[in-house]
Length: 106
Image (cartoon, rainbow, N blue to C red):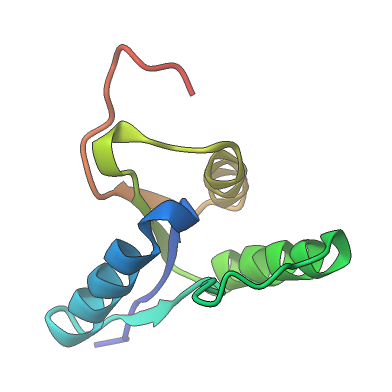
């Protein structure tokens, strides 16, 4: 069976949860998980670096079979919504950590 490739998407305020979820997807389900660049040191990143990181993340989505959106408490920020839109545009499946709240408009 072919190993599925998944990219984790979500707000950096949930980076610790995203790391745990990625580990579970790999160890329990056998997926190949592509992750974002995490900010552990609080270092300043300029706009050019942010743009490079965002471009690389979109490439990860393009390489993936699907994305896994970490939407804790229903939160989906602007950048994550752009990633979801990109994935849908490129015919990638989108899975959410928590069910979407119908009363929210993204």
